[in-house]
Length: 270
Length: 311
Image (cartoon, chains in turn brown, red):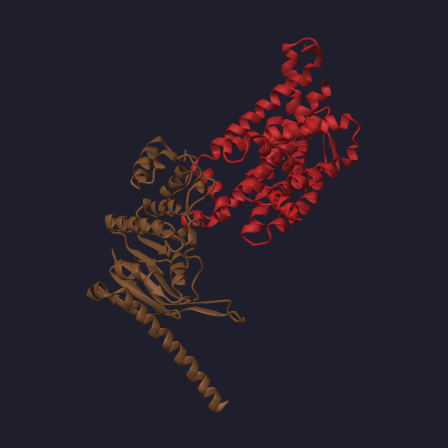
């Protein structure tokens, strides 16, 4: 489904701020898999998602989605294959457009945008049904600008928008990190439900070890632009949040060791 | 009375400018200064075509098209070549000054003896009324003035309805969403750059149409006529927003038209009271400045009150 081969990305190359965000990353994801990505800050997990989404083009390597080589596709072209939910609840919706208009735009993701009416009466009826399934009382507010809603509501609607046209690949980028605990729970429950119902191939980045342990059928842990740990099947089922925290601790210690070793060598030889 | 009718007519004609400014400044949040050149461009193209004997409708339509081309240039500079937005507008505006002179061949084209949209309307009206003047609410009003005053608003209303409908189509809504949240529209598979280019084309097309009609109404095109027009349009948009609010598209469009007409009336009254026409642009600029900082001041007032109370 998703094939990533030897992908590299360096930001601010040749400057003091040079960041080698992805360093020869390989990843194959099967159709229907729900993969969780965790990692320390700056490990490249969001960069990985953005590389797939086409926010930037990678420096080296190849990206294939559903057999199509998308390495050089611009972001808006890849959108025909991808559904995306962002960390910032304001990123996924247009605040001055109504709920109905936002959803209707999403219903044409990857399709053509002509001079026909955006919200037909048939589409409107469907919108009502789908929105009422959220049980947030939004079905009677379809003509309210979406900017007046809470972050949780907007994120739930963004998820509906991302999955309205069943995407080949769903990208969730810490999509509950900016929400209050209750909204986060609601959005996670909704995500699980939609992913299970449509059997969506999903790549989800999260900060929450609880989510990482509980959700998905495969777990990737990233560090320094590479995949450090790849758990699937029974191993993934057994894993517990505490173990993941312990693994992070190991990584941190190994990093410290690197630095102190370098320091020691420097003291001896420089 | 004829002063009032003149102010109303020009107010309606310039509401096209206000709509153009509304699209670039408000929908796309793009401070587009191309309008200063494209309003003259519309006037220049239409005038030169009228002088060479084209039909007024075709000449006006081509004025609109020329404006769209100018807007696309600014859009391409800003979006495809990533030039600063304000600078893109300045570049196009500067270039347009020479282009306009080239098109016109001289700095001023009189249209008094040409067949224009306005003279056509006048002819139609004269067929209906035999007298040169008709009574209206106790005033004697020229048939020409009255006919134009009926025609121009009708035309503006038609443009507004078309614009409103357009912004509710899939394409139009995608354009509005681009100004709101470009990231989102990319994630939904539209090229936000093309949306902005198209938006600026539409905006400047309307501005040029305004110039084209203004030239036909006042009877000449002048290469200097665009100076200060962006601020004029912005003032109209701001007045409109104060009158009817901004939240909804329909209100915003109506507001821009109302703002433009009201602004022209205020100007006419001020001139009548003896305002020096040379000071008009300074006063307009001061007005826009005041309107722009007003929200900030209103926000700060409680803070000042608290400080005063403590002191």
